[in-house]
Image (cartoon, rainbow, N blue to C red):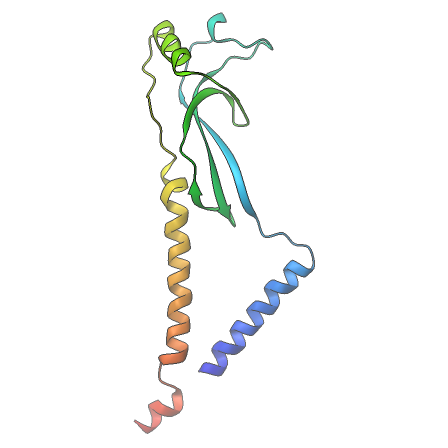
Length: 149
């Protein structure tokens, strides 16, 4: 049993190192996310110089490995143009915009559930499965021991 697990582990590590050696990237790093939270009317008051309109959004940065986020920064309220573009707004600007558009803008925001906890849960489950595999391979009974017992 231990030989099977060690062989499987060796083959897996060889396969991963082979992928890395061939230049196949393992996605990791940081990504900036901008999410719309309040829709503003498309009027001149909320139009930028290039003619596009903005809404209210939240912006934060996530750190991820294989697209699973494991940490994020505190979100800040910004002007949302699209998923890649935002407008910096001060708290005074946000109050003025809320009065002009007659909308309620939250003072604080939080990252999405998956960005806050989902990736940690999945990575934790993967870690538990790996630990269980290691535990069962070293502390489980071998087939020879089962037959003599």
